Length: 224
Image (tube, rainbow, N blue to C red; front, side, top):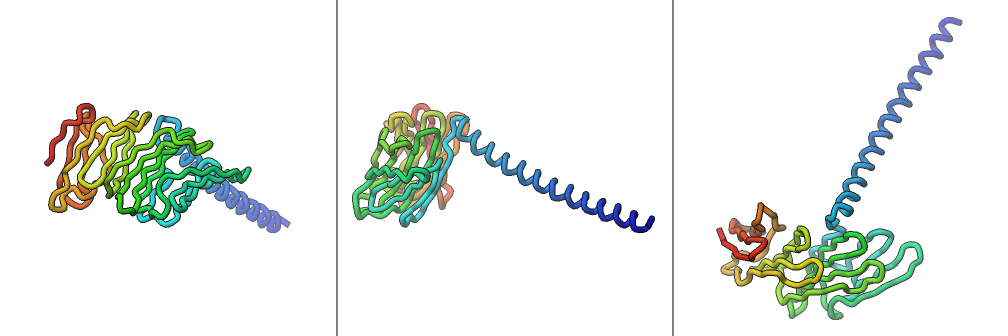
């Protein structure tokens, strides 16, 4: 009888150890999940623009955000509510033009889209949309190409294209300053994502060693 009781107690101990391990793993995974969610929420709530999607090159891109499904087709952005199936549409570029690049960001009820079309116009467009109905709040078009990944900082967007850098007002879409005409013999063909160092915005070549430094307030620049 004593051996039987000892055996039963041993099995109970093993069972408790297994339950403890599974509980610990579950709590660990749950904690990590909450951390990821908290970091994303903090990014959105702390006046940060959260990246939703990046496409390069682009073929019928589809992305999702806050209960909506989005799809580009023939120059039209279509939004579908996943609950009610209600659809909204907005034309962003001419029919028949393919997308070469697309960056999508979201904060609150606003979407910012950066897109480059593969048309003869080499059109680069920036659109600020109200998410609930895709109403265009503002838009900015540039006759250029080689769209680079943008940087959000305060009320400004820092953007690049071939041989050029721009500072755009986030609330209005107005260009605050621009540095153009930098492309020469393959230099400044494309840029990496800009970075901020004190009062300077630093634009580095995507494939090269040249660096453009621009005063974020005045637009004065130097190349090194």
